[in-house]
Length: 231
Image (cartoon, rainbow, N blue to C red; front, side, top):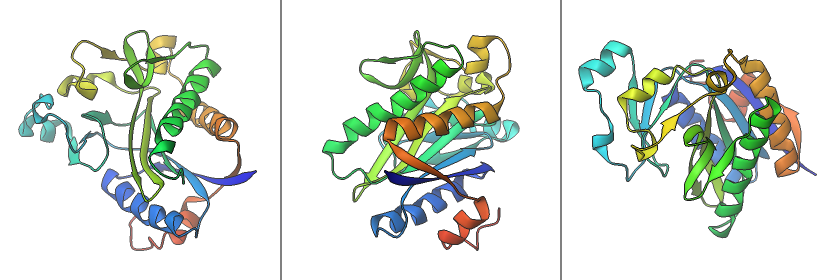
């Protein structure tokens, strides 16, 4: 069974996470590290993919500043989305090979999220033609990917106890006729993040058939050669 390092790096700046991912992707491409899953929460952030519609940002610069929201254009696929406290971000750094592996990888990520929702009594599903995981016509988890030389970057965002009002400032994932939801919204109670992280790790190991090996944050940064990053 292949190993997969899992590191919970907690609340972490989005720009620093991009840098960290780039360093880890390069190491994985050179076979210097095994597959890896980073678990992160970000401060209030909007991100937009390379081909997204800029009109899907509904709040102006003054409003973003007032609310403390950062904005980034990034090298993933997909439209505009939100990251913030109470949302679990998963960044798998996984070697999947070429283009044919992307479909299976996406399906497996969705399966991890569906099983995680089921652990909390929620029946989440796929919605044909729309990547991610859904509860009815409301998105529970978004997925955005980039694969470079066979290694994945970016990943998924699962709304655990997210403040969903921040989605009002964008057209989430470019879909004006669908909504967003969270585990806490569906359950009617706040879902502890520690339980969500534990469920994700368990299901990631099962779905991807890997041996989960915990990694400490400080060791991860040292491994990436990222000692200059302030944590």
